[in-house]
Amino acid sequence: MHKLKVGIYSLSSCEGCIVQILNLEERLLEVLNHVDLVECRVLGLKHDDEVDVAFVEGFVSSDEEATKIKEIRGRSRILIALGDCAYSGMRFVAKDFGTSTIRADPINMYVNVDYHLRGCPIDSEEFLSLISDLIHGKKFKESSKTVCSECILLENKCLLDKGFLCLGPITRGGCNAICIANNKGCFGCRGLGDDVNISAFIESLKSKGISIPSYLLGLLKGPGYGSSQNS
Amino acid sequence: MIKKALRRIYKDKLRLLMGRLSEEYNIFSPKLVEGRIIFDRIDDVSEIINEYHTRPVLPVKKLFLPQRETLFEYEIVDNDVIISDKLDLVAREKRCIFGVRACDIASLQILRRFFSRGPGDPYVIGRLSNSMIIGIMCNSVFPSCFCHFTDSGPLPKDGFDLFLVDVDDYFIAIIGSERGNQIASKNEDIFLDANKDDALAIDNKVKEIVSLMKSPPVVDQMVLYDAFVRSFNLDFWEDYAKKCLSCGKCNFNCPTCYCFDIFDEVDLDLRKGRRVRVWDSCHFLSFTRVASGEIFRRNRSSRLKQRVYHKFVYSVNDIGLISCVGCGRCFEVCPASIDLRDIITKVLCG
Ligand code: SF4
Ligand code: SF4
Ligand code: SF4
Ligand code: SF4
Ligand code: SF4
Image (tube, rainbow over all chains, first blue to last red; front, side, top):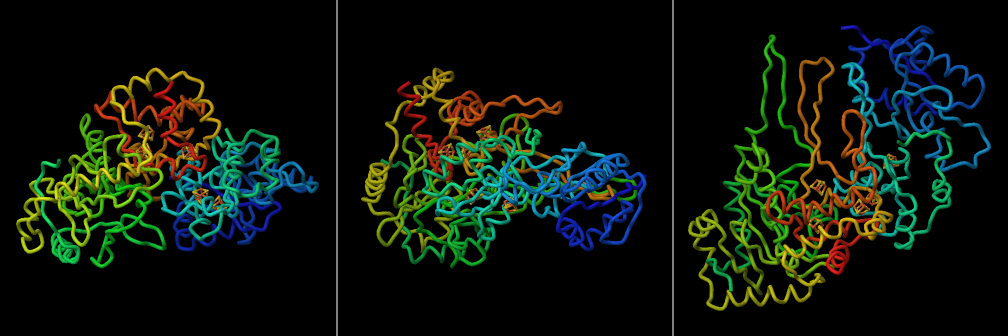
């Protein structure tokens, strides 16, 4: 079987998503039996040639990075945005919908993105299922569940009912509600779910006496990165 | 008045009974885990709780249709494909499920009908046949209970081996099956004769529980069916849809929602894999997405209606029963507080 040539590239980011991949340890070694990792700055690998799959973490913060992402797209067959930085320009983590003055552009403002791995950082299990689909030539399917529905599978007591803010009802699942399992409200790092109802969510918070964070009102007008990423 | 055979079990003998049963059966029961009551496997009968003032979060369904289940595994060995079907494990296990409430017992009867259609689902049906059910009547009602309206509780009609009614320091045990009868005769030191007033005591207890319940006025189920059929195009569905967050929680913790997704997980070297089934929810946009990308229920109201109409109309067409057992879990967990009893009342007035 032809081994996929894979590159991992960083724009402006904390490199936390790459750390999630490296944390896979033995299971990453198993992956490396099936792909050729040709470029990864953290591991000192440099390639500058065509790849089958490019993973890109980080957002675009300068013209140089805008040129770089176009150049990477030009020589990769499949391009994957890693983490909330690449997906939304870190808006879901920073809760900054349309007010920011610093440049933090999601990469799909410049290039077509084939798949997104969401979250801050990405979920390493989800990375494994994506890479396995690519190796087998399958289409990767993002989770279409909400964090809420994953939360009830864990039989958690709902934080909203205890009076705490939790963005689970509007957030795309795939993380198995890991924050709630650790007693913290979901802060929405995976972005919006398939068909979220933000105004109903605001009403629901009101009725439970939970104060409405102002970014939710901003989010009502859309996440502010100008493309239809939630269809 | 109840027609089934009755016995008495003094409460201090319950653990003795469960201990004996645990020699033959794997015991499952509501269990206290970090402040929540959940159904789980019990290793020691001291973990069994018979009094708790809430329902387990996820219904007993999860023990019959697990939220994630490997159906079979396969492996390529010397150009041969070896399949190991997990059905063998299902068939081998003997389980006793203790502490099931009437609404959950009724839901198992509904799941049995759903999963017996067509070729049948041997995994779910297998578990239903090899599980002994020891139910227990609710001592109090929860704000969302309305099982009286759906005719599924607080006393189940059938679908159990034993059903315990809590009276002072003893339980009245209702014998619901031949298997239950055998357990009673094998343990005569525990199953004492019932008193002649015990049937009346059950009656009184049922009346008391029903009087506490916030249930819509009971109507004939065909009247309900017709009312739903007539209401399909009324405007109020849009009002509910405006409130709904499409989060899917109501499906996942409904004792009769049985929809699932199936996929294959293949190891990287392509030599091994498994077929997995997980729960799915008709509130998700992806639920009706077909291979070409079309989505048949794009409107939120059409998805909300799918859930409600499945319970009260499609299910009647399909298995001859409504598939709501009045447990109230769907609105107890609903972040938008969409109360099914309000919907029913609107439909009946409509
Ligand atoms: S705690 Fe959060 S994720 Fe869990 S059910 Fe409540 S709102 Fe949803
Ligand atoms: S629970 Fe929410 S904040 Fe936590 S990882 Fe999942 S999406 Fe991100
Ligand atoms: S529809 Fe709601 S009330 Fe009826 S059985 Fe399901 S969860 Fe219970
Ligand atoms: S269609 Fe919806 S309401 Fe009906 S069983 Fe499936 S998930 Fe439940
Ligand atoms: S739980 Fe409530 S908000 Fe969530 S999908 Fe069901 S009806 Fe809608």
